[in-house]
Image 1 (cartoon, helix red, strand yellow):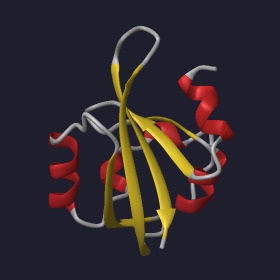
Image 2 (image 1 turned 45 degrees about the vertical axis):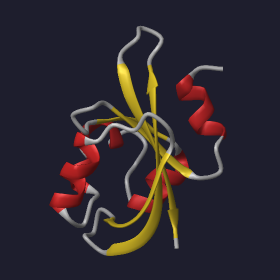
Image 3 (image 1 turned 45 degrees about the horizontal axis):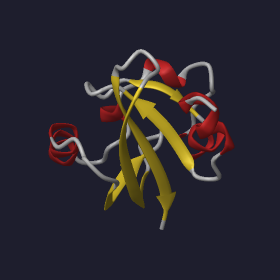
Image 4 (image 1 turned 135 degrees about the vertical axis):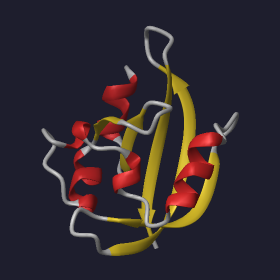
Length: 107
């Protein structure tokens, strides 16, 4: 199973981004949580989803060696924010490109 296939099997909202914060793919739960259509999510960046810019910068600068879990506030397409627990996992594509998997759960 590839990384892309594994996120579609996940029950949580999951997206994969590059280290610049560009969303490369996301599962249906993620699209539903943030108000995106599956076809448009890959045109967005994580900065579109974080409530606080300084928190986003800290997250992108500190790439986890192990699963990294934090409580934060994110916002959907309409701008409405909500508290959530974010789990980040560093991984690589089949080509060896570094990626981040983001698992989001509302609290």
